[in-house]
Image 1 (tube, rainbow, N blue to C red):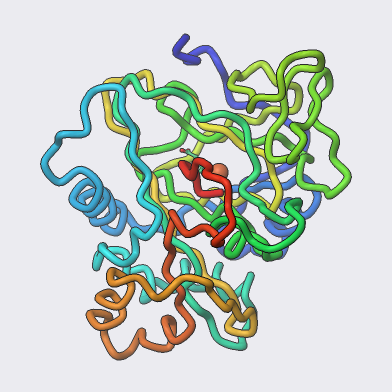
Image 2 (image 1 turned 45 degrees about the vertical axis):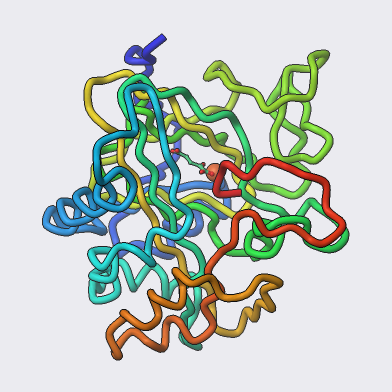
Amino acid sequence: MDYSHIEKPDLGYRYEFSIDELDAMNECVEAHGFAIIKNVLTEELVEDLRKSVVEVLDPDGTLGAGNSFTHTAFVEHSPASWKLFDHEPFMRVNRFYCGDGGLTIHRSAAIIRNPGSDPLGWHTDWHGFAEGPPQNAGDVLNKFSLPSGLWFYITGSFPKHGGLAVIADSHGLDWEGPEGFQLTPDKRSFHPIGTEPHSYVGFDVPGMVPLFGEPTDQLVFATRTYHAAFPNRIDRVRLSCGVGFRPKAYKIDAPWPLPDTAKAFIKALPERYQHYVEEYTGIQNDWRPDDAEPQADAMMG
Ligand SMILES: O=C(O)CCC(=O)C(=O)O
Ligand SMILES: [Fe+2]
């Protein structure tokens, strides 16, 4: 299935906004759980980011047909992504969400999906449903009330190219799953009623909105919005990346030591950006508390 038949839906409300319409954009995020900000990047930035994602994630071109790879500390390895800090439209969105009290780099990621790569199942990146002490890095980092998606799909987002899909109105705390589905016990995904509680992979879900975006657009989704990625069924590598901030006031006492890659990043970052990394924690994807059960950590969540 290549999903090339899926068209841009008419939802009866506007969800694409210009950079000068951030209040209206966020009203849409609050009402429906997602929005698109048009033309946040320039073509030149897109080109730089594309090169950088490939250089950082698959420098030797050995990833292989049908494979994908997610890097969860992209900003540390990508000086090209630091150019975003001087790009006013990008910083305007971040200040909009983080306020004026100072910003800290929170998380970053980049993904390569080669032609033929599989879809990514439905999930929320939010870890706030989990109770008790943190069991993994996502439990530490993904608990804030900030948009969990502020992504650039720098080769475009559309269904046959492994684009992003969201479920409209799935971001409320009391959302119970799409019609005909029920949430998994941990509420991180959903599955058809009456089947085993595995994350559902499929694009026949009521409320699904395939997002069609240009490489220069920023795709925004709310803290809890359930989302998935189509399989990449065209003959072009799908690339995406994001660098997210949190307000300086959101303190994190990371249970992992600052990774060496984070130390090297802080050292290499020009002086004028140092205020963005004073509270940077980096990420240790395999961090577990001393008494933890083994578990997978493949996604941004
Ligand atoms: O690959 C994508 O487009 C979505 C990635 C994602 O949702 C994740 O890594 O959590
Ligand atoms: Fe995700």
